[in-house]
Image (cartoon, rainbow, N blue to C red; front, side):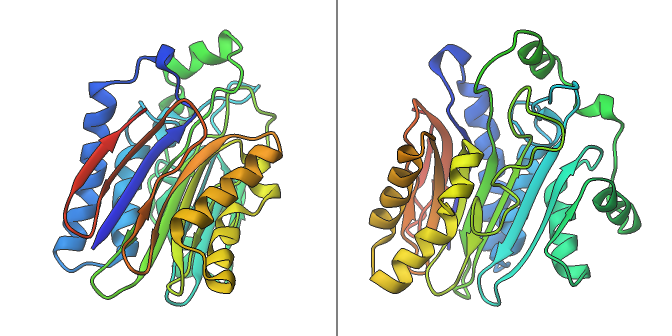
Length: 287
């Protein structure tokens, strides 16, 4: 059993993340790991971990999402399980309290993979998922970031897990970046870019400059390197991030392979991250 989570890369020391961020990561990590320890599925574990982070205004997902140039939160999310390569995603949603739950509903209740905007919200409402007013997502911290015109102010949350049955899963949720154009969609809900899981290789959840991660097809590239070239998880993730850097992007990711190895590389000043490895060892870090 293994779980790894992230709360976004690109964090700066000037942002003063500290004990409160670590405590929030610990809560999310525990929410997912308790499911695995009870014999639950990796899919349930990653969803539970991401819900905790979506509900916490410290993170750029759900309630704490960045605001676009119109001053509104527009959120993306995706989830994928590695045994049958099932996946679901939502994009550019403004009222769904937990976009990751809507993404899972798309996977389990429809023939589709990705629903966007108002159509995704109508679907979420029909599934009984909780919707909120736009004011719920407009936090003082993110409103200040928009007002100050903070550049490259972004982040993402995500989780990957391996359960007792050997099944992998990945989940990612984000509010994008401050001041983005309305309707902009990043890598998080795009299967193979910011999110991917394949029991034959690994599960990945990425964070960073989404446009570069899309162009490099990062998440699938890592799986492909492992499957077709026999690369280790560490080598595959390092090479994929190198490609992002060559495209002028930065960021990081969390990944776990089918043997329980964990990788949490990043090429920014910091990445909020945590894991419990196959030996039960716990790690929470920022820098």
